[in-house]
Image 1 (cartoon, helix red, strand yellow):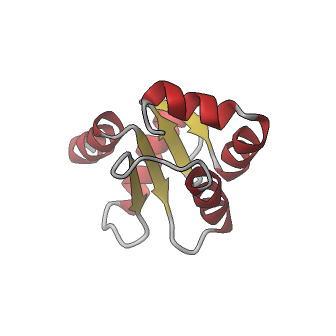
Image 2: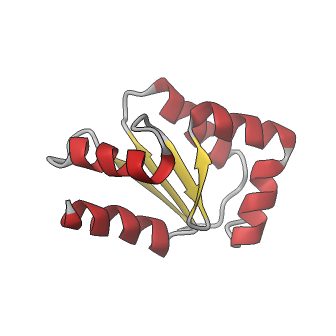
Image 3: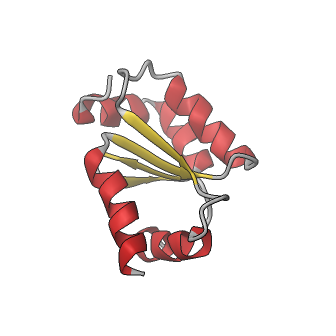
Length: 107
């Protein structure tokens, strides 16, 4: 688990926006659409598809430890957990996402 922890923590810590996703997940597509509608600066978002990672289950277990849920997507902005697909889409609608991205220097 320590290499999984290092992998996940490293991605969260080294990117203004970090998203753990599965390519076939409709909620992940919802989160991606919400984030991409915000005109992110090049290189500020790291999108990680985990379904083909041999540690996929362990990654989701660790994400549950961090966020309270194993589901994807798990969206982090400025190293803080923002939510999943519905949360990210709602934040885009109500202006909270733009504010968080601005504070993180991602837009």
